[in-house]
Length: 195
Ligand SMILES: [Zn+2]
Image 1 (cartoon, helix red, strand yellow):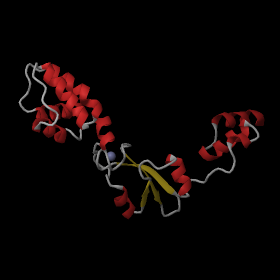
Image 2 (cartoon, helix red, strand yellow):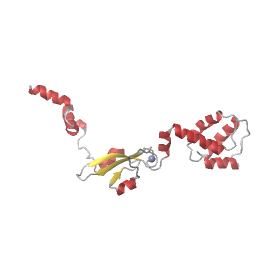
Image 3 (cartoon, helix red, strand yellow):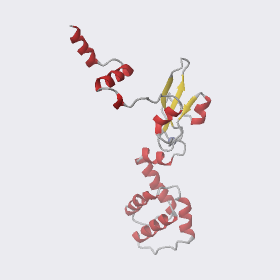
Image 4 (tube, protein in one colour):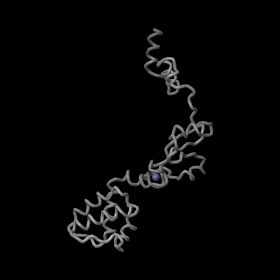
């Protein structure tokens, strides 16, 4: 939280309990500014509402605010860690590519060691740790995203033609079928033709 946000929140909390507002440069406000720095600004409303439930002003405002912040984190496990996470940039993990011995590339989502909920049987490594295992990870916030990364690193070949250039939908669909396996609809059409 920024200095101003902390001070505004403190003033509102003090007013709630009919206490005189402390000066912004007072030691107690400065201590709060230092202690609440890592709490997101948009949480001040939530914290203020928590104070509304109390009968009196707590002696230790830092402890009270951080306690409410902890409560909020437990209530919102996904949003909070992601937002804060420096390792994965908030996506919860990394697009990871491993070249297999047969030359194909195995793509998977490597979960973030910092913020992902740990499950047994999974590995939680940082991109540089993955790199030592021969796995390439897309850096968080890669410009253009996953597809661009795959083009840039030659993982996926950039299509020469846009879908529009295929003469008709059937040609495009056949191409897709070729990639994904045969389409059942066409198989039945062909069976009818043959009979
Ligand atoms: Zn993370």
